[in-house]
Image (cartoon, rainbow, N blue to C red):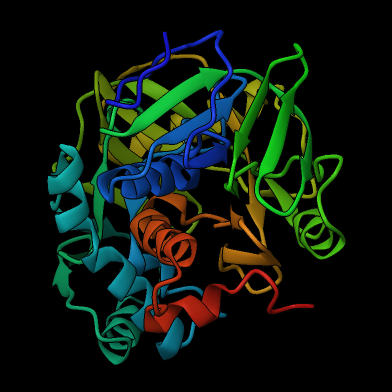
Length: 348
């Protein structure tokens, strides 16, 4: 049975919703939930199974992202504004937001404190490094489930084979022969190749998304009081213990776990915690990145076609901002100021 009241419903029935979102990662589900909250009937089509968003630690980390060499005050301010959307977004959709901060251990702590202050982030010296209250987190699995069950959202397990459009609506065809129609489509397909039938400009934007393979490992171990990060490692509290990661391998799309790398990082992480623990199976996801590291969010230059792609390391941080940009574009509202930085056609 098809329902637009909400809930993750796997329906064999084709339908004609207001909006079809293709892809159930964090950007697709945040956009679907936002549109549903605005009164739209939204169908999310996704093949199911793990994706890059589920193979993530759920960090909402504008401060430590801004320690990277290529960050600028303008980028840091955008990330901070994106984070500040999270309390209202979490309350709307029943998500638990952990605002417990982050501990950083790395070289030259005075320089790191100076850089964070220059970027507008609070931080203080700690016995082993620095502590900042600015970085938060969510539990990934529960957040994805809650967003998929948001009012107005129906999730259908299927693989989309092609798109086509006429003057009034988009036709979305699945590999199993099912077909859906809607005046609006949002592509949130990660690093997948452009779908057949995608218009040229949109196809070029999708094709330019670069893959980055990431891996983390769940570990049954006593969690630290807050996220713990070093230059090449993070340890994040999670259900049942912690997750330890992560790798970032440019250009790789394969998802076979690297067991040796997982073991190396788990060993380093447990040594940092000063604890013993039992590692689970590594989780691998392939994240998409644009040339400037910001998402492609908004109109794809065709009537009724929008993108929500390529957040690089910051899918969870940027989810609510991308959702507003996409939903405003769908409704023809005036864009928020940060929408220009996410314009999908800014590289054309």
